[in-house]
Length: 189
Image 1: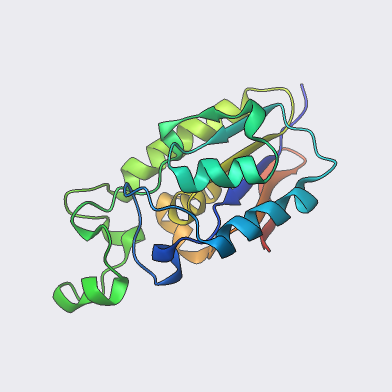
Image 2: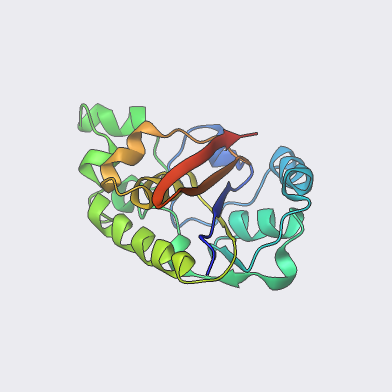
């Protein structure tokens, strides 16, 4: 069996991502700019073969997958949903810090939503699944979830995702250096 690579694609821009609103379970569609950027992903992904194509159930991730040319064989999994922001859904970090100074999703989680450990458990299930296939995989998901997924791939705690910023419609690749899991490329737009 080969050592699979895991390609990460963050969905294209939405009205909420453009304004910094935490968008977990609210199904906000792609903007026109987000759709255009998702279509450009076909160039980045051209020539690659994926044994497994997974997406979050949210339309912004599913539509990005379709526009990137991989919608014909995608499998939807709730493990790729964005962080459940609970009481903080639709708020910006600045708005949250008005009542909770210093708040950081990766350290503090969200009241009424998920903790970093819970998001890490979902990421671990994706990592285990990818490492069990023969061939490369690609996932279409969300900024904070993908940052946790990358941290877990290399054996770091979910909180380490705080150090891995991701732009919308970006591509990153997780792979191997011999037997060591590594981040091969990050946040390519």
